[in-house]
Image 1 (cartoon, rainbow, N blue to C red):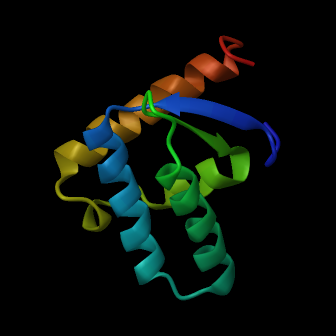
Image 2 (image 1 turned 90 degrees about the horizontal axis):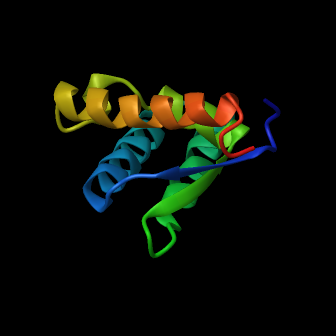
Length: 100
């Protein structure tokens, strides 16, 4: 996967909002400019969901979303595990050719 490939994800509004908030929290917590820029891009991508709740992330943005998968950035561990599990499932389906 290259950093510019686009992958479409779909989460219900509550899950997308939880992910959006976690990425924002990770961004507020970061100290490096590169990390802040990457998390900003991922946060903006999550903010611009389509009416059906789907959104597109590049490989680079997906990398930074993964950096937000620390419990301290989430409401609770269960929410983090559920949402990141959905992202992982959809990425796995994409990587096997379902939506390439």
